Length: 512
Image 1 (cartoon, rainbow, N blue to C red):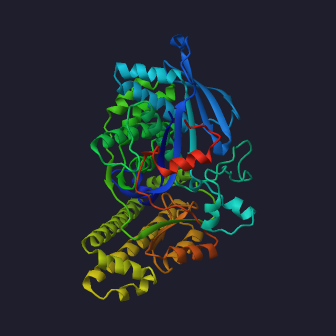
Image 2: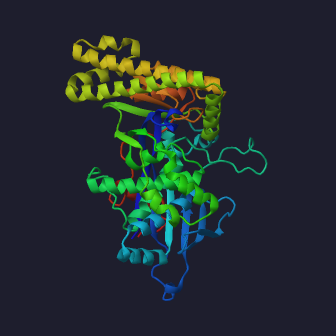
Image 3: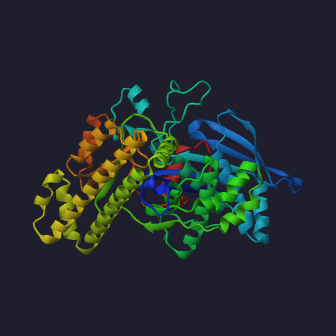
């Protein structure tokens, strides 16, 4: 029986750079762009001589990259040896490899003897893992332009699910450098790692994930999600070779949220093991019992607001190099950098406050809230106050204008940081697009997500104004993506309609 799990991509609205250091918070929205992992036995039955086996088989398939990799995994230390591949140099996937090793180590450490025997039998059957990412994780802009098609969401929607992935041009790469997958900045590695960890832990009977139609907030679910989170964070950090803030994995597990990072020291032992090539079992208990002191509170956009993402076409930015430049600037000018971070933190908090006010106003007086949002969705911001004729409506407009002002201050401080650090956090081309977007009818705010750069731009629209922004972006040569906020985190897909779509989309992969 196959297990299908999915985890969402993310958009970091506020907290870029600051979120790397405690106690700074960030607002991260999970999206309808999801990564899927399908786990099932590789063999139909356990071989008679399997009791003497020291190794088992693991197959990893990525249909979108036309890659298939076979591994031998040691049943003693869980080390993976790549034994065959469609392209040996290109096809190693450290995120999935670490997800497999950490998930099995966690299962062994968590299950009792009876269930460990059950786990051992499952491992002897081998693991057949397939990974699939929604089209939204990857850029198809070059393909669309080369095909002579218009840069519209309709064209994106017409692409087959899980279309083959394209690569950035290799012209700018140094000799012998591999071309990079053209991505849109939604956190594909975090969503992929989380989906694989969740699918494996469910497959082994360590956790029991909920599907979309079940209550996602039951106490048992919460404990299980916490375990998925710890293992996914560990695997993702070790795979990327550094301990990041973890907001992308946290949103992949739990969904939209206000996030404060965990202390990096919780993974110190895992880093030592990775560097020295020691078995994961030596540190898995430390990781599971470690002080995971991240803070997470529920957050999502207020009602009748829509998250929009646009792809300007400049290609993905290199987040690690930009973070490195900001850290270098902090060391070289600690006084100025601290002041900039203080102002940026205040603006981030102000935007969060205005969103909370708007959600509360919607809850307390829905009719007044709805009428204002719908009316403002048909006008530019300078005319919004004219849409309010009563005090309760004025309160909604004041909060909307407060949110706009906070975002303008966020953008201003992010630009100052970029100029001081010598990196394009909000480059002039993006500034032009964002200013134009914020002047459109029904546009509440616009910005560059996460670390900024040339990835995507995001906007939040009011009421029914999405169509206006779509048309305007198309005229500005911006490809509007199909991404929207979906506050749900990781989930089981067995009873979800999307699971049927997955099955038909990859009919070549047999899901039993």
